[in-house]
Length: 290
Ligand code: PBG
Image (cartoon, rainbow, N blue to C red; front, top):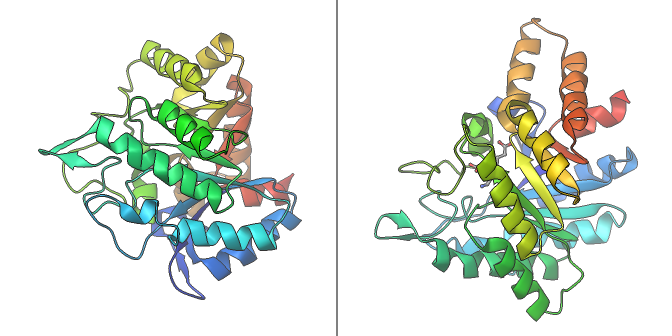
C-alpha cells in the first residue's frame, strides 16, 4: 500500500486525482498504517513530501527528513508491517527531476551518490527494503555498495527496473508534488514502444544486485511483465500506477463501471501476466473486499 507522508500534525489532505488517498502527516500515517496492519496488509511503500525543496534534493537524505521520521514512528507502532521506501530525488528537488541538474541536464553519475545516501538513511531509520525509482544508470550497484559499506548487507533492493516514461503518472505527480518544472523524464525513463530495452534494463539491475525487479506502469505493460517473468527467476513486482487507478475511480464515480469488479479484474490481470508483488492504491480496499 503506497502512502504519501507530509509535514505537520493531524494533516489529512485528500488528493483530487487519487480519491481515497491523502497526504498524511506522520501521526495520521501511523493511524492508517495500523489499520492496514490490522486488516492483514503486510507491506507499505512510503513517499515523502518535504518541508522544503532545493537543487540537490537534500530533504531526501536528511536524517530528520519526512520519510526518516515516518519510518521511526512506524517501526515503533507497527512492528509487523514491512516498510518499503521509494528512493528518488524528484519529490525533494526544486526542479522536480529525479537526479541533480548540471548545465540544464540531469547528471546521471553525480546523482548516484545522493540516491545511495538516501537509501542508507532510510534503512538506518528503519526501512526493511529500499526501492530506487529514479532510473539513473548504475543506481542499483551504487545503492548496494553503499548499503554494504554501512553494514546493511541484509537489506533487499526492490528496483524499479523497467520504468516507462508514462502519461499515467499524472495524479501521482500532483500527490507527490513532483512534476518536473522543465522538460520531461524521457532522458532516464524508458520509451513505451520498446520491450527489449526493458529486458536489458532488468538484466543490468539483476547484475548490480537487485533482489526484486519491477515493471511500471502495469496494465499498459502486461506484455513486459510476462516477458520479464519468462526471462528472470527473481520475484517480479508491478506498479499499478496512479493513472490506472484514477481512470477506474473517475468512471466509477460517474456510474460507468463497477469499481470493485474493475479493480479485481485489473489486479487479476497483473497477477496473470506474472507479477508476484503488486503495488496498488486499492490495497486497503482489497483487504476488505477479499
Ligand atoms: C518517482 C516515482 C513516480 C512514481 C513512483 N515513483 C513518478 C514519476 O516517475 O514521475 C509514479 C507512481 C504512480 O503514478 O502511481 N520517480
